[in-house]
Image (cartoon, rainbow, N blue to C red):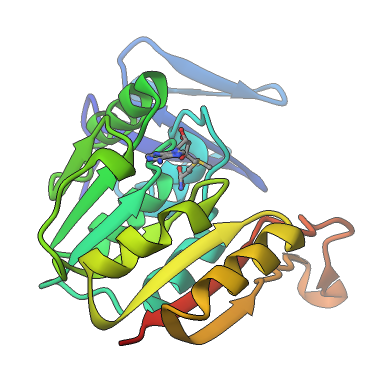
Length: 246
Ligand SMILES: C[S@@+](CC[C@H](N)C(=O)[O-])C[C@H]1O[C@@H](n2cnc3c(N)ncnc32)[C@H](O)[C@@H]1O
């Protein structure tokens, strides 16, 4: 593919990465080097332009650099593993609440047939829709500016469920009802006391319980002196999984 006006592009300058929309007349300057967007038009994905490289954005680039975050988000390192554990397939209907900034919804939408997502806050709901619209994502998502507790569903309607709210134990019975037998529900929580409380509520309703966290460590890209970065994000969230038991 080659870049045209209106496309989003990743502009790479050494280890620095920028996500920009290609608008004629605009430019980007980094450490005394300038790339004019006009010069990117017609260039190929991965092509060098002066001191820069131009690349089409991946889903990870879009979520990390393109989405406006009005809430904490599920980071890509956690999101795709959660989707794997949820066993999301093209034919699946997936339930999610709360939508937040729409980061996790985007990953679920990428893999599922349909995602039904619920968000109580008007502001966060509008922001998530804006994020998806900007990058033409989530066309298979039904988004509702509604409290999950107020939503009506048939029983055993969903193939998987993802919950990212502060007090998930308050919703467990309803989640259990709308989930198909044996299907997976995943949760993310930032603190261990929340995880303990959730586990005690999950035990009578879910089986095959698991709790984990994913540590991601980047390396300095110097082949002669390969070693980890000095700093890393130590904690994003605990991931909790269980399958509906009957
Ligand atoms: C941490 S954010 C979710 C972030 C999201 N997973 C993402 O990746 O962008 C939690 C959201 O849950 C919403 N929320 C809390 N209780 C809810 C409920 N009962 N129904 C729907 N949304 C709820 C909050 O308004 C908040 O936006």
